[in-house]
Length: 340
Image (tube, rainbow, N blue to C red; front, side, top):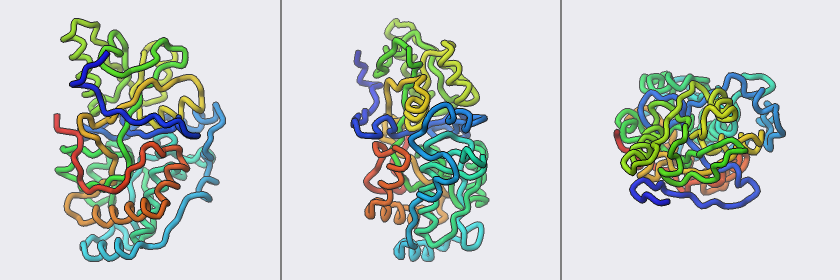
C-alpha cells in the first residue's frame, strides 16, 4: 500500500554487525512542540539486567570514552564570539540522565554517572572547546528555560531541530533524527510503512511531539479513505508503554530507533517493523541546542566537524551502535520540523 503524500523518507537498512542498533530520536513528553527525547524509565538497571547487553552499562564504560585535545579553530571562534560560560572554565551541559540506553542513561552500578552516546559527544565538545565537561541531569521539561536563561550553556539530549525551537535556540547538528515502530515479538504486524498499516491499531506515541502529529496525519488519512483509522495511546514513560505493548493493551509503539533496537536486541520481547525521519517532510537532524545568538553554536559545530574528519565521531557512534545515524557534517540551524 502506498500513500505518497505521507510516505516518510526511508533510511538504508544496512545489515552490519550492529544493524539492529540504528539511528533515533524521540519523546514521550515535550515542552516545545516538535521532536526530542524525553522517554523515561523508573529503573533502567532493572530493564537492562534482563539480558546480556552488547555495551558495558556500568561506570567502567568511562574507561573507553574517547578524548581529544582542544581544537584551535574552535577555541579561537569561542573567544571571538564573546560567549562566557555559566561556570568559569567549564561547559555546563544539560542531559536527561533518566533516559535509556544507548542515548543517555545512568550507569547501572551507581545510578548517578551519565553514560551513552550523548554524554560521550558532550564530553568531546567540551574538550574541543578547551573547557571542562560539567554534565547536569535535567528533566526534559526544564531544559528549555534553563538553556534560554543561561543556567546551562547548552543541552545535548537528543533534541530535534524544529522551526519553532529555532526562534529561541541555535542548533549545531550531530545525528539524523529517526523514530521506529515497535511491536511485540509475537505480533502479526511485520511492517509499518504507510497509513493503512496502522488501520485499526492502537499506537503508543508521545503527547505533543512531532511523531504524534505524524501519527495523527496517518489516522486522518485512513479516515478519509474509509478505513478504521487507528488510535493514539499515551503513557507517561516507556516502561509503562512497553508493558502495555507486551500485554496486548497496545499494538505498536513509536520510540527513538536506537532505544527500540536496543530493547529488541537485549530482551527479545519486541521487534522493529518500520522507521521514519521524525521531522518529515524535512530530513531532520538532532542538534546541540544553545541560547539564540549567544555565539556558542558555531564553535560547537567546528568541534563536531573536527570529530567527523578525524574519525572520533564514528568511534562514538560505534560504541553505542548508532552508525546508521551518522551525518557527514554539522549544520548550524538547518531546516527543521515545520511549525504546526
